[in-house]
Image (cartoon, rainbow over all chains, first blue to last red; front, side, top):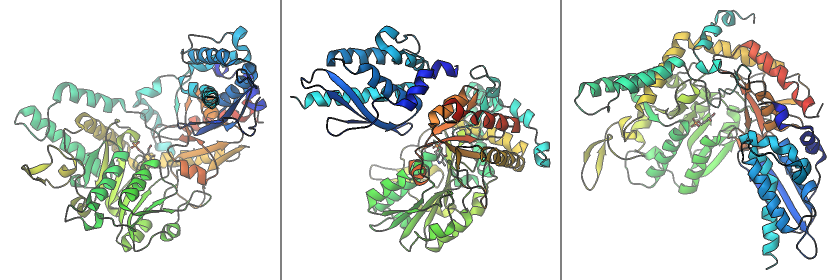
Length: 148
Length: 426
Ligand SMILES: Cc1ncc(COP(=O)(O)O)c(C=O)c1O
């Protein structure tokens, strides 16, 4: 498969730019590890005072361009969503990633994240793209737990 | 290449033996530089497996019918072929699933002996404070079984250090060997560095304190003519699938005394002389380690592969690969931002080079090479502690096989040289 199908310029850029990079104090950080390649990611979802809107994502980690760009693009595109909005958004992203190329991410809905559509054809790389999302869902679940 | 051996080596004929080399990857000819993970297979070997399974299949070592007798004969021949290939006698070869299985069997031999139920196995009995020596250069397969054995018995795991260049010196092993050392387990060739370790010296050192030596020969057996009897190790393991043979089979080599002393670790049919409800008596090795129906087709296929290697010539293959490995190292070394793991000078090496590329993750390096049909291994190659020791998280490994050409090496290095630019690092 062609390299360009995987590495769109947006991905190469976000691999360097890293929106949301840098972890602050507190919150409910989630640590995710990919044992096949040793990649690691720590990510915290920040919520507003009402605990219903995501104000932003903070993350640090090391990994391939796909995992780094995915974390960066997630931080760029999903900030400002309500929790139910994000849950649906993450489901849609996951479904596309697991579709083996059948479902492209819609640019209207996913913005620059649509650049990651090609990843779904590279089955070995889907985990890389999902790392930040799994961390985000985990961080969010634990933030909600801590409310109860 | 100007090397006369290289000129004489019939690499094009050799390539014709591997059907997979004719299958393009991403529309490009396959450049297979992942032999250290698993090798390509000979068409002839695969056909032998199919022929055997199609026409000659029968249960071995039992049954009086003609097919059973003929299958048993072929199976025994296969064991003899594997034995010859590594300088051993058939009685010294135990079939396993792979190298990992072989190491686990030996470790389990220690564990079972340490329970204190058998009498003949004093050297296999570990007590609290006994020591197990491994090295920083080990694959997880030659580390974790020993870690678990230490945990189960109260023995202490000691780890011989490598230099910053990944070199394991005899002195480094001496530094962790003591009169409590019961096992010294180490790799002949590192699967990350390609460096050949000094087996005879380390073995002599281990034997001087009465320790049992376990050699991981996974990465040497396919590439270096091997005489395990001469090396003097007590045990050695290797896998068929890295030697152009099938998956699912490997061997545990043991010296006579070692196999006689080690207790059986798997139990069932085909391994006994006498059974009643209280106990069983066991056949001599190798049968006492081989309960159950063996890997028949795989043994036939493996022997076929080794016969082809022998016909081409072990020395010739080794010389060819060494020349390629050396060229690979020399071509990669000057690339800016590309660091080779492991020294070149003052050590013997097989044709294997792992690199860390500045600013580019190995997954991305591997993907970039893959788009040009080049197959390499990325990650930590089942050697996390070694990567940590060398100060990198993971690496990209290129390893040659008997079918590799200089043109492939040059092409791969040329593509590698473009990786950093593509990912905006140069
Ligand atoms: C040095 C070394 N030891 C052990 C192993 C394990 O071999 P296997 O997976 O065939 O059991 C490998 C291969 O991955 C290896 O390279």
